[in-house]
Image 1 (spheres, rainbow, N blue to C red):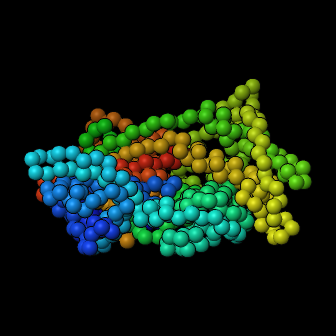
Image 2: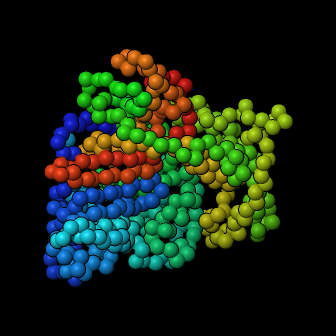
Image 3: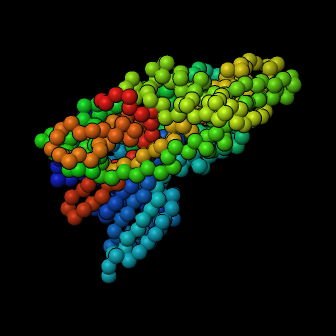
Length: 449
C-alpha cells in the first residue's frame, strides 16, 4: 500500500507550517505554531478517525480570551524535512481541555485532547435509515452523504444485506456495518483513517497481510549489542525500545470457541438449525498458507495440531457449543437481501466465525516498538497503520562487528502495523518526530530474509 523512501538525518525532522485555531466566538483565526511544545497523533486500524493531544505554552491569556470550552477547531499543517517531502494537513476539534497549569510567572501550559473533524462532526448527527447492498457500498454512501468523505476500497465483501441503522452516529453505523463484512474466504474488513492521506481506507485483512513490506532492503533492527554500519538509513532504523504483553493466550481462544467448537445458527421462521464444526486449522490457518496469503518465508503458523488432548488435536475438539440466532427472513418476500445477522449459505455463517478468529489470532502476540519518525511522514502515501514493516531481532553476539548476526526467528518478522502513536516535539530550537507502533503477525519465519 506504500513504499519507503530514504531520508537523510537533519537537525530538525519537521516544521509546523501552521497550527491555526478557529472559534465561533472569534472573528479571526489565531496562529499557535510558536506556542506548541508537543503534538501527539494516534492512528488505529480499528477506528475511521484520528485522535490526539496538543500542549501549548500560553503567555497572553489565550484560553480565557478565546473562551475555549471544546468544539473549537485546530488546523495543523506539517512538512517533513526529508528530501522531496510534501506537506500534509489535518483538521481537529478540541474534544476536551485536559489540563491547565502554571509554567512560570507569566506563562501557563494547556493540554487539549483532539479528535479528527469527521469524528466530532459524526457525533453531532443521528442516523436512522434503511440501506441495502454490499457492506462496503453502504459504508461509502454513509461516508459521502454524512461526512463528505471518500473511501478507498481494497478487497471484495461477498454478502448483500438489508438493514436499518438503529439510531447511531454515521461513524458508529459504518463500524457496525464493517463488522458484518467478510470476503469469500472469511477475512474481516478494517475501516481506518491515516495521518498522511485524506481518504478513509476499507481493506480486508487478507489484503493487508499479503501486501509487501515497505522496507524490504533495510529492516528495522533491535540488538543487545552495538550495531555498526556506514549506511545512514540502516543506522536510523534501529529500534529505540520494544515491549510485548499478552503473548500467546491459547486458553482464552479455546474458551471463546475460536480453536475448535460447534456452532449452531437458528432460523426462527423456518425452525431450521444451521450447524457446523469450526476447526481453526482446516478453516483458517491451512487456507492462509495454501492461498499464499502469508509471506513465503514466514508461514510457520504459531498454532498447530500437535497440541492434543487424549490424542486428539485441540482444533478437532468441540470445546464449546455456541448457539446464535441466525435471522428471521425479514426480507424474504420482498428482496433477496439477508438481514444483518442472516446468511444464505452455511459457508457464509462459518465465514463469520473465521473472520472473528482471524482478527483475534492476529492480535495474539503484539509488539510495541519505538523508532525515529523521519521515514514515516515524507511521502504522498502513508507508511504506518495497515502497512507491513520488517523487523529483525538478533541474539547476543560476542563480536558485534560481524555483519551476519543470528536472528531470533520467533520474534523477527514482517509485522502488520495496527496502531501508531506520533510524537512531534519541540526540543529547544529543533523539532523531533518519534513513532511508537504496535504490530502483529500470524506466523514466524521459516527462512532468514
